[in-house]
Length: 183
Image (cartoon, rainbow, N blue to C red):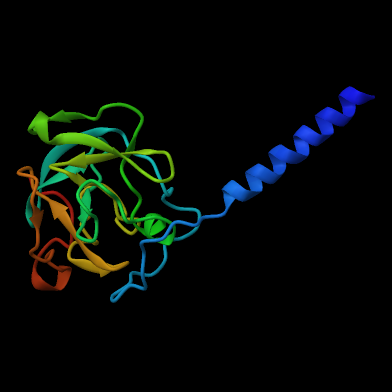
C-alpha cells in the first residue's frame, strides 16, 4: 500500500514537471515587418537537419545548403553564435540541428561549428552564424526566403566565404528561374 502511494505521488510530480516544461517562455522574436504566411502545421518540422554542409550554385551565386540540398540562411538579429529564433520564428525558419559535429563537402572546415540552443538542441553554425532553413522553400534549390525581413531581422543565404549574400533572389517574372540551382 505504501509503495502504491509513492508511485502515485511520483507520477503526479513527473506530470506536473512535464506540464511546466511544455510551456515556451522563449523570447527573442518580435512581430515581423514583412512576414511570410505561417507554414502549414503538418509540413516542415520545426527542427531537423542532416549535419552536412555543402555549397551549390543558385540564382544569387554559390550558397550553403544542407545534406538534402535545402538552402541555408542566416538571421541578422542573431548575436554571434547565439540564436534569437524560437517559437513561431523557429516554425517559419527551422534551425539546422545536428547531434554531432557537422561534416562538410568542399567548405572550409574551420568555419563549420555548432552552438547550443535554449531548447537543448545543437544548431549548425558556419563562420559563427547559426543556420536555418525556410519552411516555405518547397524543395532543394529554392531561395524564397532570400532578403526577407521577419521576426525582427533580415534573412540571407550564406556564401561559402561565410558572409551573407544580400542581393534579392530573381523573381520568375524578371526572367530568373524563381529559385532552384544552376548547373
